[in-house]
Image (tube, rainbow over all chains, first blue to last red; front, side):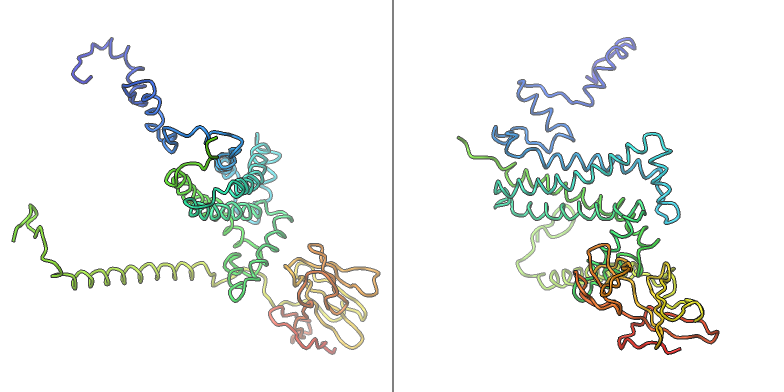
Length: 247
Length: 167
């Protein structure tokens, strides 16, 4: 193409086509090859295999629960990032910020409720996904390590849920974290120390709020994303989605 | 000896440098372990605060005159109840020994004095567990009178003998 000399008129005429082909990188070949290339040539789709077994696509077998969990995570990441524009992790401001989101900010109440309900739904979806994996025996070799990664992802989901619970700084939040941190304090030998470091003090206060905030918006989501990457990669490496035997 | 493009030996006689190689490996591994371990220890220590901006554990609750004989007065925000009886005065913790919720006083019950709203533990008038998941009695805290005549409660010290301050 570089050898071709275009007139300015032709360049302008071919611009849309050139842009599209620079992004999509079309592959010459049979229609089947072109379709496969469209999948593995796309950064967002390439985690999928170019070919899947018919039985892997049976919705009734997986119920799409893993993907639902992932999509809920995406919804939570986007809505949570937007909420951060109006939220300050301070004991003086946090509750009022939350009320402002409900009553003053345009569409704030929708955003907050999307975040809240998606969080509840994600815990449920992850739990149901684990049930599906268990009842279909998909945790067995060679997928046993991916089950362990999945357990870590379950823990990330629960920690995200727990740390997010404190952020509205209302009575429910305060007492839930008081109770939760005291449960951690029951761990033998180091329980009291865990509680002290978790709260950054002896009681649920400003130090606890900022610690939970940093965990909620930075450390835990990044850890969850890394684990998800490993989880999805292992699905492929362990032989694709488990599937019922051929009939 | 044959030399490659970079001037080094392309093939090494077997076993000649194993001693040096394992030494370099050990030094590298040790340095890495010390570095990473040090950073882990520092980070752990960093996360443990040295200064707390929390209310002091020992605090004044007021003069004796505001606690008449027979009264049970809750000090708001401190989780402590001051009980004055004929033979002395003592401070009962209102923090449930189960999971740290504030227990609430129960009125008009001869046996139960406190009930926890979270998980239903109940306590008698001196703080003894009557029922529910609480593993221990409500503790009594040390109490004393300072030089100005004000009563002071120290929640960092538990009064294990459950002695009353005679006033």
